[in-house]
Length: 594
Image (cartoon, rainbow, N blue to C red):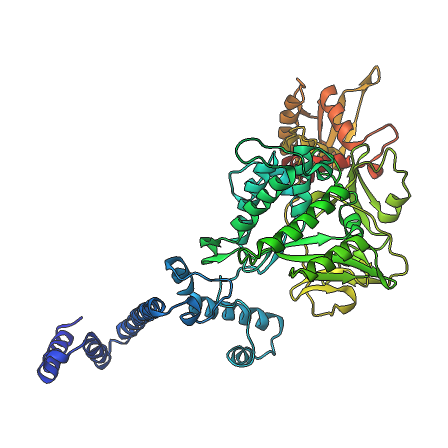
């Protein structure tokens, strides 16, 4: 800054104080600085100074708005009278709620912008300004002021929880091993998941899992002996009273406000199933100890909870869980008349729950494929297979289908096949030429929600799971990347050579200049890992082929196992042993790279 500029600035400020005396503000002085720089041609400096002023003005304005909100919140008698977007699930008026509510205006503006950007991407001709005008007048975007970019609702299976507790969610609790630990860790799990979603956490298998632990605790027929005393002391309890104590622990705990949700309680949903729904969803379900779900005890337990919850709500306002009773109604009657009558009785006594009525339990399934669709499946007796649905159906049960599981969304899950005759079939072709053939009522996850096939349009984006196949390694033999690389190399360019007394020793790999060094490195490491002693070597090069050879009966036996090799196998009909899918990810990566 030159002397002339400093002199002009000094004179201007002095004149300002002579004119305004004690009424000079920081903004007045900054206006003079900005004007003097412009007059003296310091345009770049002036521009930076203007931006600096604007940024700090925004900071001061935001701070002023926050302080005004705090003052309004303190003076209000409840949260709804102070916030820009009240929530009926927030009943407290405290500092934790204040710190969640104070960010709602910024959250809403950011969520609007995220939505606008996505709509512009999907529909370039759409008018987002009209959308915002509608949101501010005739429309309400639900929970737009809550957490930024957070997904809405989720329904979860409890199977990973039963296998591994909440460690997969970043928690410390291992899998539950008793009814008591199940109840405690279940509460932690619901809170941990709810902290990552705006809306509801649905656990339709809650009572099914609880029934499993009840049977482990008191025997398969505990529900028949529910009046049996099981505790001693000043207040002895029978089985039914113990169960109701656990009901109380879970239900009251989940209804407590959660700091991770801005002082809201968890929005928790559960389901009650009739026998038809149970048979479809859990008829072939196996728990981690390989025992099956049991309808009789589960039915008794779910009815007990439904009745207990209604009676408990006479003592205290319990907003959650939201309960849905699922009933099949077909040919003019409810198929499970017992649960239907029980639900009617509960309604007559003032109970409150949703009733889901359908003519088929298949409505809960979204995996309705063509009989020619290929699937990856395994059983406890026959290993891993890739077949069509029809081929699987035609296999005999014994030796093939015991405890079968399907590879779905990156993990092995229990499956059940339901034949649906007479349904219309659709072939869906994606932009990248992926084809699937599914029923008309197959639910397809899209950007606008789960849409049945017959309602899809060419503007829909289908959501596919692209996560790594991080399955539970049920038969993990601790195989390595190097071992997988050798198997993959053999499938690509390998062959067996000489043998002695029926035992194969020599293994040959036809490589090129770029690949042979890595092949030799992988062979050396893998051979040592399986107990071999010899080193690989490079044979005579011919026609740009770099032949790599190794003599190792241990490595040959390893390759034979993982390629299902037998005499008469040639380059064109080599096959990978699909049981590799039960092994480590590193082993499978090695196969692909090899």
